Length: 197
Length: 197
DNA sequence: ACCTGAACACCGTTCAAGT
DNA sequence: ACCTGAACACCGTTCAAGT
Image (cartoon, rainbow over all chains, first blue to last red; front, side, top):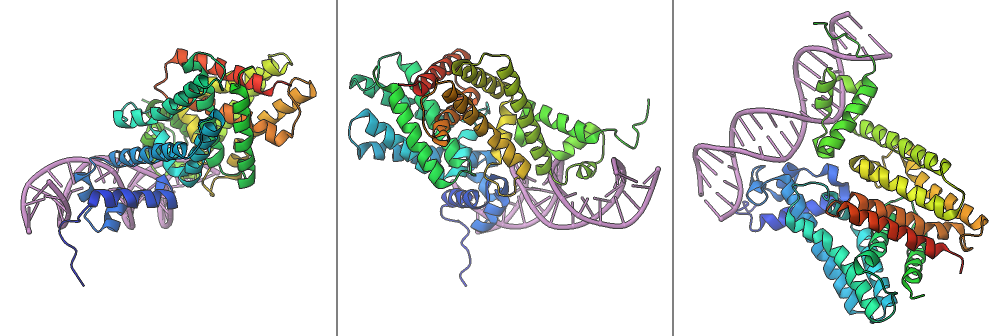
């Protein structure tokens, strides 16, 4: 059998994918840096070259998650028409789909909102969702499909609803069909709320 | 100086309050059972008499949190009028106030939604918020202040909004006045959304 | 530049034994 | 019933040393 080479090749990427796998399969509490190193076939000290701390690895994973989420959002907006209703539905469904498929990762992504040591890269990634909501409302107002009003205030109910929907989608204990119905109901509720009087 | 007695007196309660203090001051990652034991002046093995595992202590803390939250909700509903708008505003403000004052605890409370090992006591405590939203809508419908519709569906947008609002309140990076405005805006949005056509 | 080996200071949990 | 003391199998992180 071929001896493992001294250099791993791409330990950084390997650690990230291994971390995401165990995060998905066994949750954040079971994620041990030493175990990741074992699975990657390196010594316990090896990861520190690529991630100074365990938290740094988790932050990198969270940033990767935000990148995947926002590019999925952008892609779904590209595939859909220009009406406010269509765009809002697309964004909500994409976000919810991501939340359902990556619950633990999403919690990791938003879990460091409090920590003052959170990297600025992570902070700005978290704010992109708020910006997306704002863009959606601004576009709807331009098209006359959303009632007028100050943009920063108007976008908040949408932002709030999106965040709340993900809680519903990842909260467990709700059967899938009820979540499905809840999403439809909530999207309709939001659409009606933003419609010009 | 008086020697510490062999029996602590109420180690269980002491551990819970110490745990909440460090949770508030230093976050969940810094919470060590051994350190709690040191602060309580007992041996590392002592806590296991009252909480079989660290997770059992955290679950007990979460359940205590739900009890405080729901009793605060009930109290605020007692102090307010019977109109749907007044009751919805009271519930939202109380929930948000709790979220703002107990961010880390609230995350602990909802953090175990996925885990199949979560105690049934904790699971049912988590569902009480959904029930509260449903009761509020049902009452509003009886009074003719909420448009008719199937109760389980109708209550979802409210539940979603409440969950999303707490994300806003605990998400950091939003200045307090913006959160305040966001709460008002979102409450108004929800009220309008539920109003009979 | 990248990784190993060994060490350090911690954990959570268990279990015989003490009071 | 409640707690101690000591042990076990883990951690994350550091650092000299190897390739």
